[in-house]
Image 1 (spheres, one colour):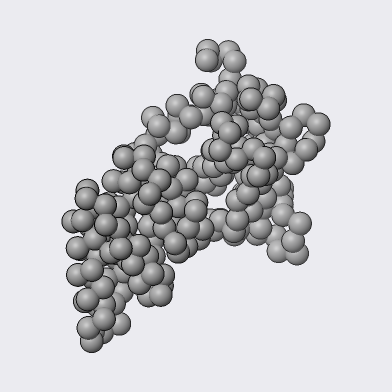
Image 2 (cartoon, helix red, strand yellow; image 1 turned 90 degrees about the horizontal axis):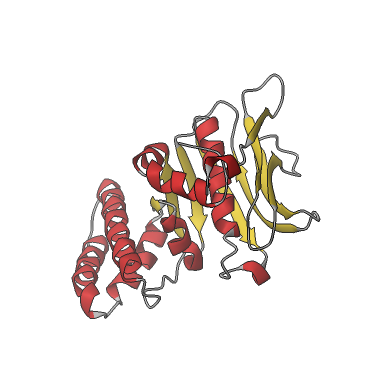
Amino acid sequence: MNKINLVKPVLRLYRPDESEKLCSFCVPRNKAGEIFVNVKPGSFSNSYRFIIELRNKLGKLLGHECYSHFNNTDSMTGLYIEVLPEYRQKNYFFGEILRLASIIQMMENKVRTFSIKSKDTAIYFHSKYKFEPSVTSFKDRDELLKTLAEDTSDDFQGLAVQAKDLIGQINSPSSAEAQRTMCKQTNELLKRYIKKATAKQDIKHKFNWSMDMTLKDKTIMENKDYFNALFVKHGIDYKI
């Protein structure tokens, strides 16, 4: 796609007395036709909640993501993301477009971390856009380790053994600090598991528990070529 075909996002201030920027843009070429993305305050009493809406030219809501961000802070929290069922996994890429909009929100508002609680079925989707495990709950840690420990695939035996070993350490008497350290070790193990499963494109390696995940601004910068290519793919004139 040539540069001339790209559409530049419009940025506006949420309120004149605040620095919060909200973006809107058109996706000129999509399987569903022209798609319009708009970030606006959510229909909540709280002024720190926002919603990214994805609509077609007739105004039909195709997907949305709700998140929270306090003005002049460097962290965002994703509350939920949803695409209408009839458009899922059919190469409309609505989830991807919503994710690109949230990345623009991060970059323009100098957000360093975007944290989410991913459903088990969406973990690989979020990892595609460089979200990484950031589990801190002992309960979540233990349940996610079970997934790894119970994976009997030949190529994953090494990770399964490490998961079982970590479970053994967790079940042994230890301090709260040691337990928190084992959360960090679990996150590293989960990261390796996801990377391996993604490389194999094998749907057998499913999770059965939700996962805290985080996207960092430095990770976006490290993968800027990847994200910039996605912007161009969708006809968005934005560069990290």
